[in-house]
Image 1 (cartoon, rainbow, N blue to C red):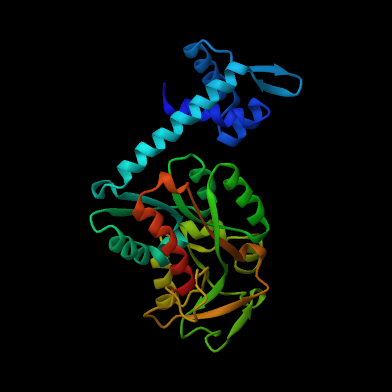
Image 2: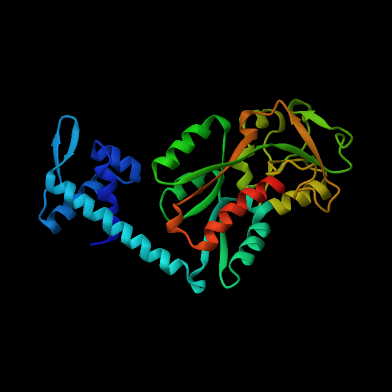
Length: 304
């Protein structure tokens, strides 16, 4: 019997119905019902009885769930032994491209010091796809962005699915222009002053910055393959760009080493403000280097 089936059983035992358990596990109800039936057939134990209020554990079911939890705990101890071996310190961090652009090298540098024989891979994803991908269970740690109004809901969702949730910071969208722009001498600019400007945007950024409010002012943007080409379009083609720097410093990655100027964007739409957050599995599911990296990530966001 696969360990995943026992994990499904333990989670279902914590819920009042198969529907609630399926929602928590992000499974179809029929998939979870089939898994529970599989366990009952294999063990010969009736685990749940059903009434108008949902599901109730039988006495034998309670004993089976307790044993399943013990097996899961032992399996996690076995994994933790493996994770302590230097040759097994190969880690994966999921994050939106906006964060990866600015912090990948800092994360890699920190991890190299923590686990010289290990390696850290950083998987990038569209901001809107981060939450569903993390909840698949294929990633043990990740850094996400969400709108301020969604922060409480997002935290509850991850905590419900047995993740630790750590807020990292609040980040505003800025306007970026080159030295020839009519706005180059400004410290701030209103969105509605940008009529006639040409907006450059990356494929990933399109989902964040092509809002109805932006479209009213700027029309259709020029879509480029990545943020590096967007930066080049601003510097060399006198285009403008929106970007969310995950830093509070006066200069950031987008401006570094260029003539590009960062300008505060006034009266931007609500989508122009984001909260960053760190989510990760419990410590015994992570290697020593991964646990140490999680502590470093908060420091990196605070100091860079």
